[in-house]
Length: 249
Ligand SMILES: Nc1nc2c(c(=O)[nH]1)N[C@H]1C(S)=C(S)[C@@H](COP(=O)(O)O)O[C@H]1N2
Ligand SMILES: [Mo]
Image 1 (cartoon, rainbow, N blue to C red):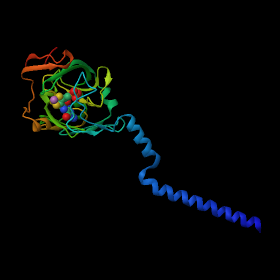
Image 2 (image 1 turned 60 degrees about the vertical axis):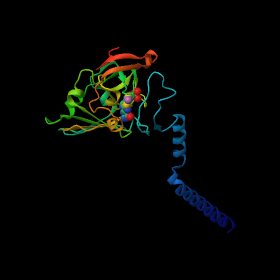
Image 3 (image 1 turned 135 degrees about the vertical axis):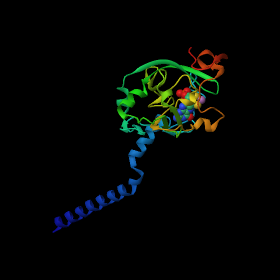
Image 4 (image 1 turned 120 degrees about the vertical axis):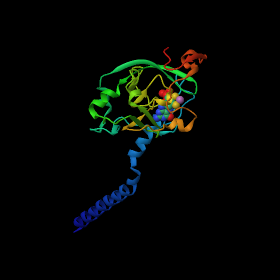
């Protein structure tokens, strides 16, 4: 009789504890418990889960332009969405894009706000992406939409120029978040604002669209580099004359 009673009490205790644990887990679930903490700690060590304007400080060889901070792009979840006026709209993983025929070039980014900086870029031509998605005959150009909601338009003619690239690699490394991970445009005969970074989407369109930067400042929608002055960061910002178009050194 005594033993039976004991077992009964033990059973009750076990049930009670199980119930208590279940309640605690249910209550804490919305906070995602340890997963949330682990993630926060991880992001702390990567400094921030946001990429923002970092023009001063760490970046001496290049200035960084993002007009708005945005949530860091995770490599695994990212797909380049290609849509609009094409026969086969589809999404591409970074691996698929890296497998396209590669083109390397050293060229300079010239910001309309005067500075310029040089790097070795590696990527591919839009022409090779077009083989897969098959744009319709009426297509005039493409709209790029970026992680910071930056928008830019380039005509097919500009995109097919032999110096225009879609790049994933900079100085033999994957693009950093600051320079536009996972993919950006490089178009050295135009001001930097025509080279959208952190691209999420390419849309084939039959009419031009005004880009973000020309809505912010008094700059041309065309963006071709005009004769004027340059302050190359790699040459101590020493002022020099430029004559329009790509700066070749
Ligand atoms: N998504 C996005 N891309 C962008 C911009 C931006 O604000 N957002 N700024 C542009 C401008 S004005 C310049 S000069 C170049 C600078 O490139 P960098 O940050 O790699 O130096 O990025 C261009 N691409
Ligand atoms: Mo710029």
